[in-house]
Image (cartoon, rainbow, N blue to C red; front, side, top):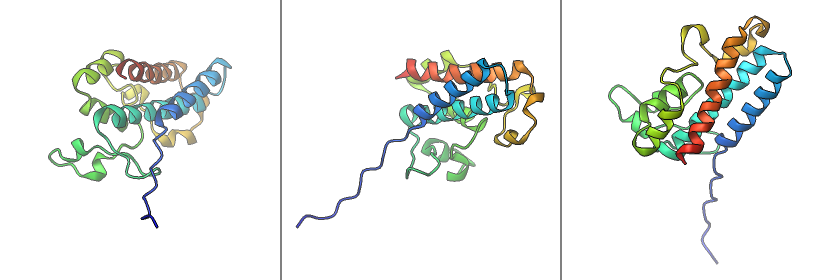
Length: 161
């Protein structure tokens, strides 16, 4: 008789999810309508790719398949705890990425993404609750900037691996 083993945790799928969300946002944008859902998908795409980089390159962990990933590095910083170190939605996931992106991969990531968080700027602030807004009132330039930011994260991931 053999001892029971712990099942292997499935690998996270943040990168694939981010790429798929970006493709969906781009298709929606290219169809000429629905700026609200396009912007929302762009933000979710960026969030997923940022989380993929945090886990794959910068030491963040995801303790179970459905748990929020978090950074032990951020958790260990003064005034932080596991809750504050968990990677939630944009713009926080971008801020966490910029906080821990270091070394060769960090330099590669920083080379490909805007220095300023495009999901946090006053004119472009993104929040997950914006899915409830009248998306027709979102400026096309904002949606384009968020699509570009999501693509910059995908590009950065590909260059950093």
